[in-house]
Length: 496
Image (tube, rainbow, N blue to C red; front, top):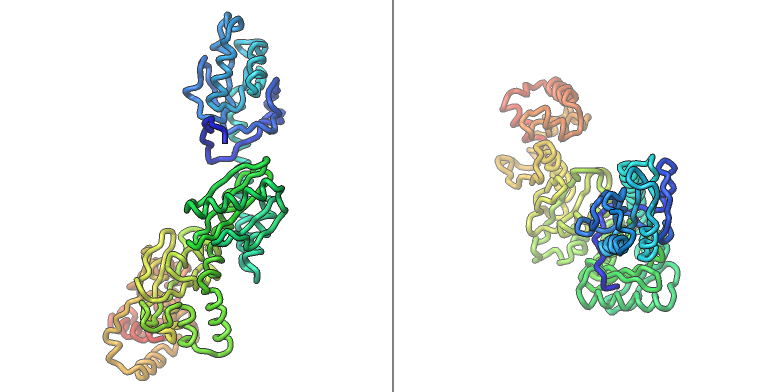
């Protein structure tokens, strides 16, 4: 890289000076300087100071009406000093208004801009500086929207590629197509495991593995370089096993880094499974389940500690999670599973389910609402799934980040299971054929008869809750205001 200081860029994508010149409503005209398509504008700023250097951040289209220019300026080095200071501060271009102070752009200013390679743009009298600044921000907003749309579409296509039977090659092929270059996965020893996209020239092809080795040896996370006009970037994958993603792109576009980072996250998950063997174990567990094996047989394959004598002594938590914002995507669901310490994630629908080997109890996760079951043996997974669902409903209703299913059995332990189940079936028989009534009654009782919280937990209107509870009371022929009746119904509804 050159030794000169590169000014920091704002988070919004820049706009081309050519796009600004193409606006007929502005009537701007470039007088001198490099081609407008090669000039990137990050913002617009007006200044009438003879030395604006201390107040420039870099990347500006500096607008001036020449108020600071004295009559004797043309005879000395004033314009050369003025332009050189703008260039030293990282200014992208200079816009000169020909009204109301000057009728034309001073020839000495044109010569200075040409000498220093600074684009000079004439602003006609009818165009205000505020109008130019507004146009810059409008173009930047359009560019930002296009970037966000491109990144969102890329994320979806990369996630889809990761779900294919050959996920690693599919992700690399998709990434190479999105960036118009080449994507390479390097192993812990620096060897090329898989690659996709166009072969770069010799110089770029030699620079990419060298940069990958640098990242792997220095424990850096990313590194970038430009070789023969091609952007070369590498990303250390988060598996901790030395895998590195290398990317080349002939043209740097806004959003490229974000897209490559998404691919790196997906490849981290995929290479993590490959390195530890959990992917093969999960496939084996699935085959055994399909062929009739019970949960107790496949649990050791999923937990990785044999199911006996491990940290959780063969027990598991079932976690139901719902994001605070939009519906969960596969990447967010996988990240949640990683935070909870389990790759066993089901992101179907609005609720993500995670099967976690028992150990330290699952903790609240930023941006998620969690319901956690009791720690159970594999044969009790279905019951734990229902526990986690009820815990999540209670957490959402009470606006609590995490709710755990109560592990204490209380008085229920005093009644034999067969007698308790027979009593529950008889008591709830009038509403057993309508699952909506049973679930509403269970949620309503668990939330101490709160109409609003029950409505939130079930995602229905509070009037719907009232109607269902009234229907339950009529079918059960029970006074639901009686504490003894509520206790007996709660006892029955807690049966699996």
